[in-house]
Length: 103
Image (cartoon, rainbow, N blue to C red; front, side, top):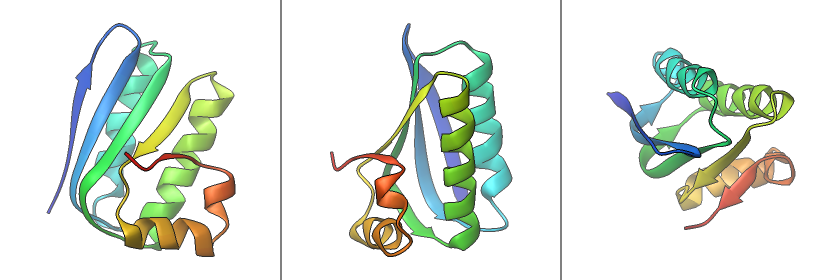
């Protein structure tokens, strides 16, 4: 199971991720982030503290969405990723590309 719940204020969309981000659930994340990009926010925060699992398709989706946000001038931040997610980002070198806030 996976949920992506969005809250917004004047400058940012915070998308709280909960559950497992895998091949079966990446479209839910894509829809949430693309919806935030359409709302003219300056930044998007992916709150990952309730994200239980991420696989390679979830990583690929996050990297692609991060790049898309960057191209449109929107900053995307990954907040409070789990130690496992941080390790995956580091092993793949994405910790050098993604903006990570340990929370």
